[in-house]
Amino acid sequence: MKSTRFLFLGALMAGLLAAPALAQEAAKKEEAPKPAASASQAVLERWNEAGSKLIAMAEDFPEDKLDYKPTPEVRTFAEQLLHVAGVNNLLGASVRGEKVAEADLPRDKYKTRADIVAAVKKSFADGAEIIKAKGDAGLSVAVKHPFANSMIRVADLADMLSAHAQEHYGQLVVYYRLNKLVPPASRPRK
Image 1 (cartoon, rainbow, N blue to C red):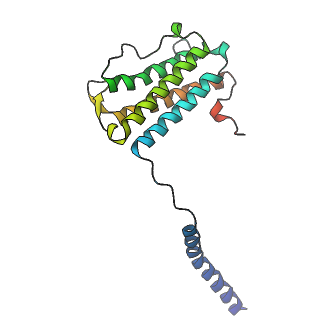
Image 2 (image 1 turned 45 degrees about the vertical axis):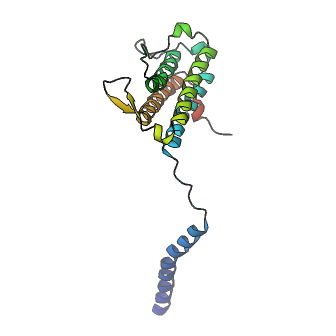
Image 3 (image 1 turned 90 degrees about the horizontal axis):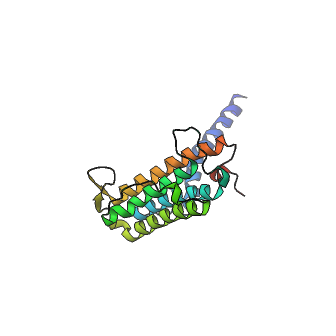
């Protein structure tokens, strides 16, 4: 009886010791991982991800609720989107050495959903074109920081603006939820 137990335990141990070797062999047969994206491709992916989320929201949120705001002290849904579009425009202005007087696009000039969607789309499309045109080498060039008396690399500015857009995305998710709506990125995929 004891010898049967030892044989069973021995076989079990041999199997457990062989499992990692078999797993490594299976991994070798799988495809090699994709290479890492170049610096400009990675910046562009983050930029476009933020853009696609906010554009989807701009196109989706009920038009009769575009001026909704949870409290009197905060921006409306439309003003949030126009703020992001205006701040996105600072990327091009900084690269061209231009000053921008006001980052927020004024709501009274963007009256309809179509106006707001067009402004948001244009701001992300223009930024994407700048990132593509700069390429890996051009993203290392320093430009005047739009919010500080310092210089900033184009890549860092684009990443900062992408993060800014994602922060506003998070705020707008709350606007959706307070209106008992599900944001486009949170809906089940078909």
